[in-house]
Image 1: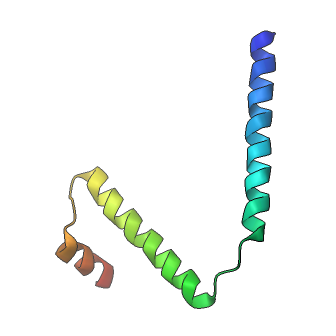
Image 2: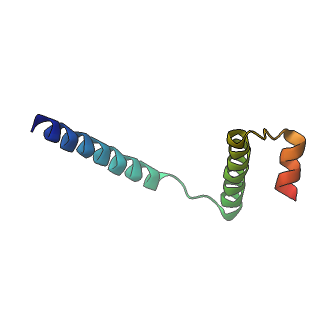
Length: 70
């Protein structure tokens, strides 16, 4: 019973933290259209870079640029 109570309390803590984070995010200024595209591109480049690392292909700058602009 104690374990169940701890699990419920832990889930409650996570839920409260999520709600607090969502509230903080809502107060941030909105991206402009250009900033949104730039941000999305940065995320895509990061995914490409790290997925290549996971796969073991380790893209260097030249290969990364070629993959981005291909």
